[in-house]
Length: 135
Image 1 (cartoon, rainbow, N blue to C red):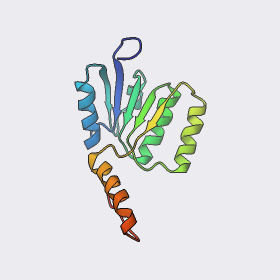
Image 2 (image 1 turned 90 degrees about the horizontal axis):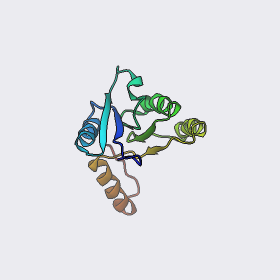
Image 3 (image 1 turned 180 degrees about the vertical axis):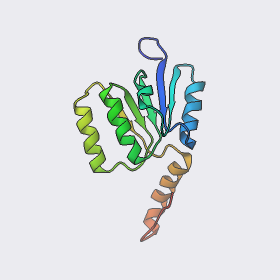
């Protein structure tokens, strides 16, 4: 629940993907959250305007317009999308500078496979001169 005792209104962008579907289920099952919108390619992004937080599991090219839209409307974001380089982060910081009350959490690689892959790579790195990891 939010600080006011209200349900947290959540929208999921990328809702038809594997991780998006898992987030939709988790939000639907949660007793302190209300699913406001499940948004995917071709859907109107204005569906997220009345929510408290957007959870985004899209692609690097799709996430940036979504973040710009949400930040401009005061909607907090949790991003599970990979591919944030310094240029994208600079754009994001610029949008957030204009909206100091909005929070964005970037936490790529929510999937257990990706998390395990990172752990295995970290443990194996001292033993290899060169490694290529394909997700």
